[in-house]
Image (cartoon, rainbow, N blue to C red):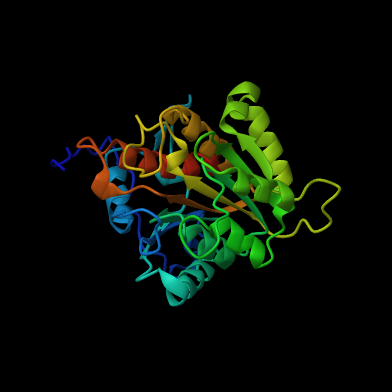
Length: 307
């Protein structure tokens, strides 16, 4: 990456401080980043373990400013920190380290996990105590075993109510009929890629937040917040070539960004992960990593709209 220009009137995103209990009232962070460089159980070869560092570097290419009007500098209106990476997050021991690291950030209003592959979703959601789940993903992630293809099934097996799971962007030719039946039998709400485009983003967001938040009368236990799984392979391969499983015809970059920001405006969303980007397989212009970095900023922008 070439050296970036320095301009005191053009602040950059990223470079946020480490959270520390000695910070007093600033310990109540609005948002904290946490790297979860999982990769060892991926179903396809991946260098996703290199991605958290790449996303942090890409953040420096952007400003933290919303144009408005009026213009808003998120660095000034939000308390943002970066807790670094969880060491060796794969496997049962690694997942427990992830849960512990997330629990230690309990004072944060939003925890943003930088993956890593999609296996990270399982431990991050559990560490946050999430009771609802919204996935932006082309795939069901309901496979047997323990891999980046199984976090949703594992969460259900451990007690997450499937009636509070909404999967947005599920795509034709990216799944099997067996897993589609598994989702239907479990009672998961599936909003396909075609349905997102037919119904529109605002309508999809309203339904997803209502269902995952347990706001339907049929769900008695509405305790606990929502975890959002942003699997970037939901996007068109032209904008996400660094995702091993992205396919032509997926979401446009602007659609993903709008969905991410819209979800983050809801105070029920307490954590999110950005996963399945392999920084080592990206194009020379790092377009996939840059999109992941923009998703971080969209989450922060959504947080800013809560205030």
